[in-house]
Image (cartoon, rainbow, N blue to C red; front, side, top):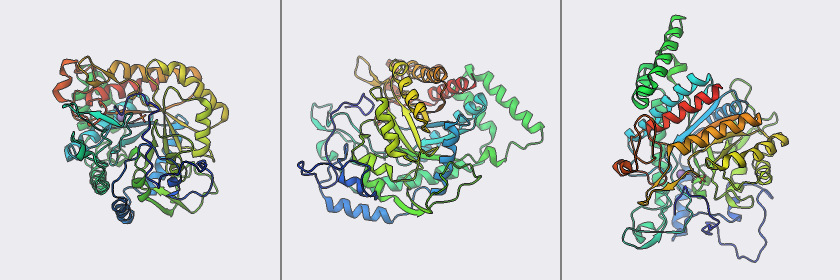
Length: 487
Ligand code: PEP
Ligand code: MN
C-alpha cells in the first residue's frame, strides 16, 4: 500500500460527486461546458468518502471565500519560464516532500527545504549556465493516492490506507482514518503560513557566502572544488563592478509552489475567475487571442495529475483542462504514445508553450526503452512540452526488513538515462522532479557525501509516505544534473 509503488489498476472507485447510477452512459471529459464543478459529472478516483456530505459542502463554501494562496500574475510568469525550459533556455528544479504533514510543520522544515533548493539551484545554474526555475512540492502537497484501499497496522489490524493529513489522521486506528472535512481548512491555513514564510525567505538577506557554505556542508570534501569555482566566479562579477551582495537578481529568487491536484473539492474551492494578467516582457507564450478573464487555480502555481488519476474520461482531467495554470502530467512506463498525444490534446488544445510539463517516472531500466517512443510522437506532432524527470517513483524497493527505500544509485541512473535518451533523440530535457527534504533524514540508501546504509535507515526515517532524498543526496542529484546540462 505505498504511494510510490507502481500503480495497480485497483482504484478506489469512490466518487465525491453523487454516485453515478451505472446504467447511464458516461459523458467523455472534454465534451460539454467546463465549469469549476463540471468534474463532478465524471468518475473521480482516489477520493475519500466523507461521512457527512453537508459538512464537506459547508467547508467548501468557506474555503471558496478565503483569499487565494497564489496569484495569477505569478502563475503567468511561471508559464513563461516553463516555455523557456521547453526550448532549452532554462531548466526546472521541482522538489519537496512526498507528503507534507501537520505534525512536522515548522519554520525549520520550510526553511530547510527552501535553503536546500536555493543551494541546488546555485550549483546547477553555475554548472549549466542556465537559469533554473524553482518549484517546491510545498504549501499544499497533502493528499496522497494509494495503490491499496487498506493497510495493516503493527498489531495486525486492517485499516483504511493513509491518504494524507488533508483527509484524515495517520494514526494507525480505524476511527482516526475517517475523513474529516475540517482538515481541508487546516491544510489551507498551513499552506498560507508556509507561503508567507517562503515569500519572506525569498526576500531574505542571505548572502552568497551562506549559500556556498551550505553547498560545502551538504556536499562535503568532494564539492570543495565546485565551491571554489563558484566563489571565483562571484569575485569576478564583483570585480567587473556588479554588486553581488544586496543585488536583487541574486537575493530575490522567484519561487513557485506545486502539488498533485488530487483532492478535487479543495482544488475547486480555490479556483477563481479573474482577469488574466498581462505578461511582463512580451515573450510570454500566451496565445494572441487570450480572453481577458480566465479560471485560475489559486491553490498553487502549477498542479499535476498523478499516474493513477489521469484517465481521459475521468474527473481529474476534466477539472484540469479548464484552469489556466501550467499542468504537470505524470507518465509511467506503461504510457503509450497515442495516449500521451490524446491527453496533450485534451489539456492543451491550443498547444500553448509552457502549459504542459510531462513528468516521466519510468524506472532506471525502463526509461531507456519506454521514453524514446513518447519523445518521437510528441516531436512529430509538433506539441510543446516541458520534459521533466521524476527518478523517484519507479525506483522504490523494500529492504529485507520491510523498509520502503530508494537507492540513490538507481535514482541517479534514471536521471542520467533521461539525459542520454534526450541527447540521442535530439529533444530537450527540461527539468527534474525530486522527493527531498532539507532535514538530514535517512530514508534513501547511499549517497556520496555521507552514505546511508541499510542499518542506518532507522536512525532518522521520518517520511509520512515515500522516502525522500536528504540534503546531501539531493544536492548530489542537482550537481549531476547541472553537469549533464553542460555536455
Ligand atoms: C507522487 O508524486 O508522490 C506520486 C504519488 O506520484 P505518481 O503519481 O507519479 O505515482
Ligand atoms: Mn511520492
